[in-house]
Length: 66
Image (cartoon, rainbow, N blue to C red; front, top):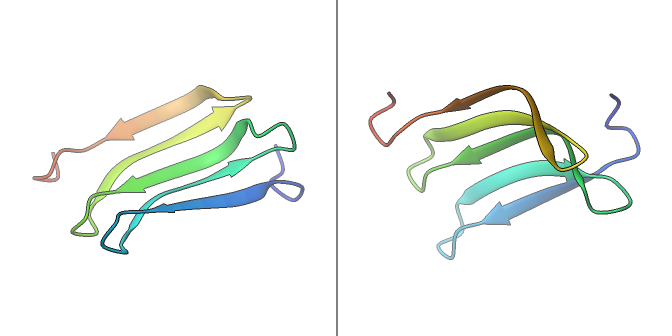
């Protein structure tokens, strides 16, 4: 899957830190990599999407990095 024709969406916490980044297609469906962070900058989760459904590997960590 190519992200060439996708739009990158970035969400932020109210305090300004990045919360989540992912790509959407023209139908606003999540497609491609998704990455979310905690307010302290630590990675919360990483996954991939295909037409709004998780596709493939999904990793999630808690606030302690586990």
